[in-house]
Length: 286
Image (cartoon, rainbow, N blue to C red; front, side, top):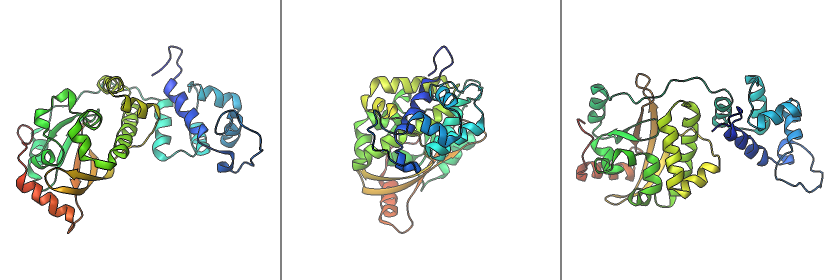
């Protein structure tokens, strides 16, 4: 979200939060013993570490990234000790690329055939706002009966924060998974600044779920591509699956989400049992 004067409030909040988490001793500065009014480094300390003027850094931290070069952004990222995901987020917020509105392409027959062919691998196709737009039979058996969930409630966010069955599936891992999901949405929002549907989805989730809103305000940033889920499945019990979220270059912004288990593991045996007993249908034509 941006002010009408060109200042990016989310960029400002992000930089302030990352400065606040650094202590002087974290960056090799001697502790003076003086009590600080606010946590973290002072602006002048951060500016000195980045090698930029205090005035220059102050404008940036106020959300004014006009005329700030990529080299300066990288210097600030190093001084703040940002992760690679956070560094990319900083660049995308500071210098958003002009982009046409993002529209979900129609699902090609080849993609539907690909899903249907994966009889032993749970598979989903996600839109830019993480709405599940297609799935195979084992994907539904593992995660949810997507066919009975209205499309507007079928995003990973809705399921994680507002669907009791989906939340129970994650057991004691729910808080971690929820935090990572919101952090991933933040990277998507920066990557697709012209995606009105994604912006509306985030606004709707913030309004409907105080838990989501709190995590959004925490400003976590992490692109989630590969991850591990330890599930408590109602049909087969404990199962650990490894997820790989893959881009579909010819069908942006769709992503293919695949889930596997370690060969020879109890989880592989559980997934095989699920494939045998699962009755939830695949999405249409899969």
